[in-house]
Length: 154
Image 1: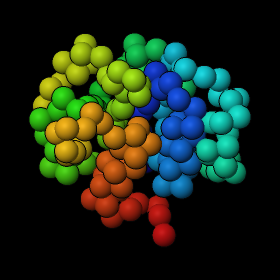
Image 2: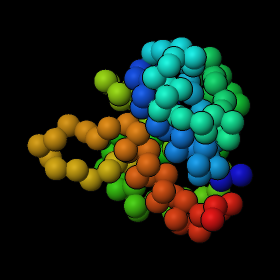
Image 3: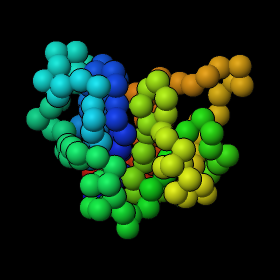
Image 4: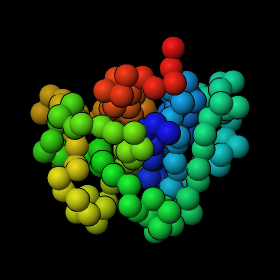
């Protein structure tokens, strides 16, 4: 067990493909919460993931409620530009879930309100809106893995 990455209703196939490749290469479970803005057979998704699909640990959940039913007792962190806590301030633990919202709108307020203390952000210039989804996942995931001493990785 290590870290879990969750993409809530992702919209852009190449971003999800890049995150898939990142998760495969880092032995991280990827959770996708439907509806997705694409098919899992999408050629752009597959191209971004290259030949790493065989290594990916993927779980697809039909909706937020189904995900919560299965993993509601775990620690959840919500990546958002509205967070007040810097992601590097978190003491990540094995089994944590880091949840990212859709590219065009981010996580809904109803999810962010579940545990405001666990809303985290990546510091960026105030004049900019946000970072690319796959870049954001990489930044936060590798901080969590660094804290855990890169379990199961060379």
